[in-house]
Length: 293
Image 1 (cartoon, helix red, strand yellow):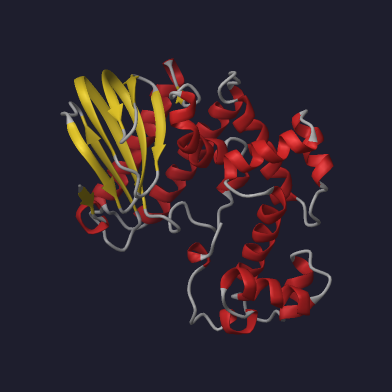
Image 2: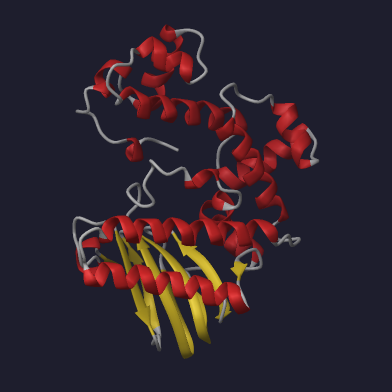
């Protein structure tokens, strides 16, 4: 199976964002990417295929293909699509908390996992002005990168954030039987991200209208982990980013991330990440994007 490389599709190697536009997408055999691909279909029809399923697609369909996921197209008829290519861990920048926008996790993480189970019924579909706006913003990103005028990185990144926030808002507004559970878990993750102290399990379950046991099963289906582990990893990842900031102690970082005991924090950090907070803060071990989610 062909694997599409970052080096072949990013016209500016130092910049982890690119846009391609296929005005008449030809049938494409199964392939996979080193990068993530946000697909916006501007017109025409076709069939999107994966290893185990296939789905009809047309104008207004928006969906995300994670890095490494095999996919392709067949039966294409004037299929006009834009691909927004994102290097994992680098784009969108972690300094901009896009994941706090309602709908982000549902659109970029949960829907791809549930795509086969939901038969593509939980994906995002835009129409009218919303589709025109998304296509217009994507064209601007493509133009900024192609022209490369001084400051294009800032302009293209700003436009990408605008595009992502808009798509997430649209996704969060449209409730269907297929995406309802995804959006409930998305809202819960927003609570986890926004609160310094970890919310109680029963409080999170109450927000979804589910029993604790039903909520735990739904959360695991969406995130592939338990609510408790998700909370712990979120706090540890937050601490890992803060450890790289100058002038803060490990104890201060531990308390800021919600841990009352710095020794306990250090043990958890090593158990989950395979290194100590002290070694991590030197910057010789890796990047936050490399840490488990």
